[in-house]
Length: 126
Image (cartoon, rainbow, N blue to C red):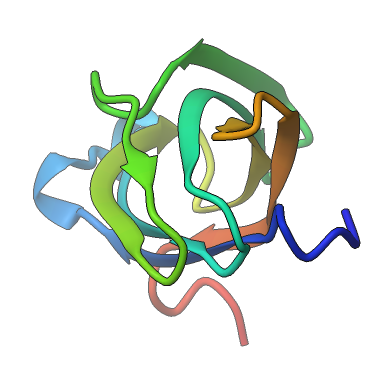
C-alpha cells in the first residue's frame, strides 16, 4: 500500500533449534523473532496473521489466527512490537511469508506484507 498513513514494516530473524530437532525423523525446529514497525501516520492494531510455510519439498502449510502469540498489539506511529515464535518442518530448508491484517485508528483495514524469509539448518546451503 502506498498511502503513507498505513505503513507497516516487518523484519524477521531466524534461528535453527538443534536441541528441539530430530533430523533422523525429518523434524527440524526453528525459532523466529519478528519486529513489526509502524512507519505510518496512524496507530494500527494487529488483528490477525496469515503465514504460508513451504518446506524444501514444496509442501505448503498455512497458519491463520487472531493476533500474534495471544496478543493484538496496538502499535503507535514510530513504535514497534517484537515477539518470538517457532515452527517445525520436515526438511532442512524452507521459506515462510505472509501477512498481518491491521486496523488503523481511522477504521481502515489493511494488510502488512511479510516478505519471504528462509529457514535453514546451518551448512545446508552453500
